[in-house]
Amino acid sequence: MRIIRTVAEMQQYSEEHRKAGRRVAVIPTMGYLHEGHASLIQQARKNADIAVTTLFVNKLQFGANEDFSRYPRDFVRDCTIAEEAGSDALFAPENGEMYTETFSTVITVRGISDKFEGAFRRGHFDGVATIVAKLFGAVRPHEAYFGQKDYQQTLVIRRMTADLNLGVNIIVCPTLREADGLAMSSRNVYLAPEERGKASVLHRALQTASLLVQSGEIRRQEINFSMLEVLRTVGELQIDYACAAQADTLEEPEVFEETEPIVFLIAARLGAARLIDNEVWQAVK
Ligand code: PAF
Image (cartoon, rainbow, N blue to C red; front, side, top):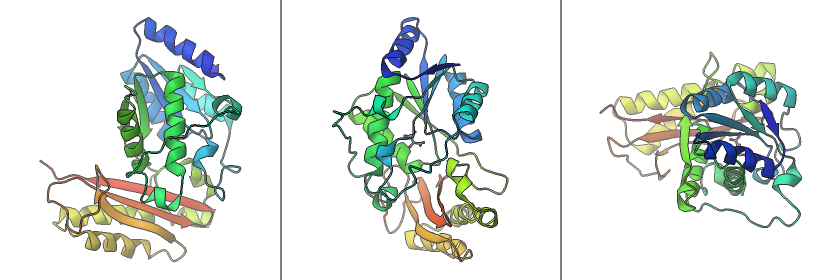
């Protein structure tokens, strides 16, 4: 696996493959890779000819009081996981390579960025949209792979890619889960051992909402309440939100259409960890 540190080298590497008629895929990550990332790389490698994993802890998407400085990092382990999953190259630039002294551009995706994660993490999606656009500019991929765990992020990136005519096919892959249902995340390392067992309550709440909608409930407040009831069984959990919304737009009607896809979104803090998870419910046609 080739390790690339500069944008110029990255563009040249990609250009050579594109000229040879190969399809280039990018898997953007902030490192501390886990099986979820590995599954994205494997999927990219199946669909495309060249898989480029990017590793960059993007300061721009962290709030002032967030975990940028303590975000888990392990470059050697990341290289092993990326290579074993089939990555052809790892693009791992330094901060100064991506954000030069004169850097002045920020991308804001209005609307879809404002609620849920955007409301709790002001400026977060500006940081995400800006770095993903920059990574697309560096890697010049045909397609890009993201995990469904960051559901709102995938909507923001789709909107930004379409609005800016970036011509990158966005592919969203299912969330990988631990045996008890906890969504895999680099941030799960923040969970203390006594908290780890309780963290699966998010998944149980999502399953409860799915079953309720499956049984015919389409009133938003009732669905939200069913999630809150489950989440409240873990007293230490501090719930930021537990909401049902239209899966495509994140609009929150009082009553959903019977056939429209609904996303259930949860964010909650447990000790030092902030957990997010979601599930999309779709009527069987
Ligand atoms: O999902 C992530 O890990 C990050 O938000 C991303 C897409 C790599 C941008 O920094």
